[in-house]
Length: 112
Image 1 (tube, rainbow, N blue to C red):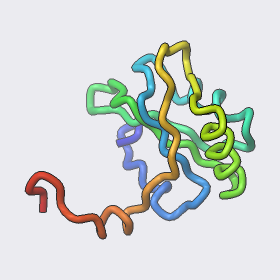
Image 2: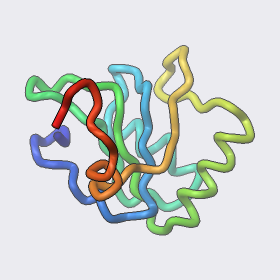
Image 3: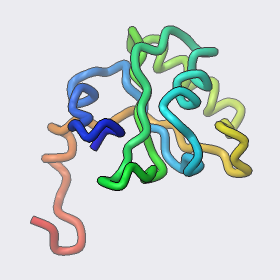
Image 4: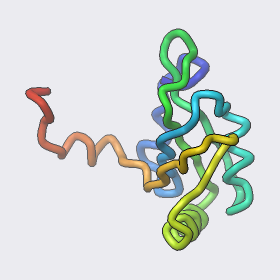
């Protein structure tokens, strides 16, 4: 669920979207967007939060093009790390998984 309480669905069909994990709990939407602007035109960035508005430690960054998102993946793979918001641990940056790809995955731990 998006920080505003709405579903984060727009990343479901967009190839220019990155998943960012291991975010520090103080990272805001603005901090996330600013950290990734150095790589290109960030259209939208948001941290996923629970119903109490607490960060779940991950978010999504939407770029104007898939090429920009690919460049981010290349840079972070080359350096091996990327830090955001003063956290002592690097974040994970990966292509966002679409709903269709999630639906094709086998259930985990008895989920159906």
